Image (cartoon, rainbow, N blue to C red; front, side, top):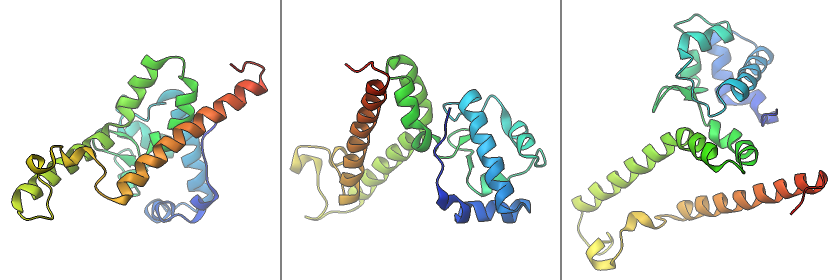
Length: 188
């Protein structure tokens, strides 16, 4: 089992904040985080920590059971539920490869892991609709005028770039998987 790790973490503001909150040095914080993420690969591979609870997670870090340090430094989220922050973004590629032949399991993990993104998207659509209803004028698209809901198309170049990156990442995952299969003599 592996986890994605980046050298930039050493001086990342979130890590430095965690060090300030806990009194740990950077080496201790990096080591404890990696041990925690390794644990997650076996016991919470979807990043969902609800079945373990805050006190259990804090215990693994050697923190007081009621500590908020991991939340304040944004390594763990409370909303939409107790979970590892951005777990799907970093561990999702591995899970897609691991469960590529078990789509039911992958869909189950992905639906749990992406709940916050879906919540954000829903909130963004609601915000856009309310703003659109508050304004009038030619620069605010209207569903009746365009014939389609503007929330279904990219609103900015950033939205378009994000969708393009998702497609490119999926293609890259497929190519990496094919390389693995070729290496092991199991290519299609």
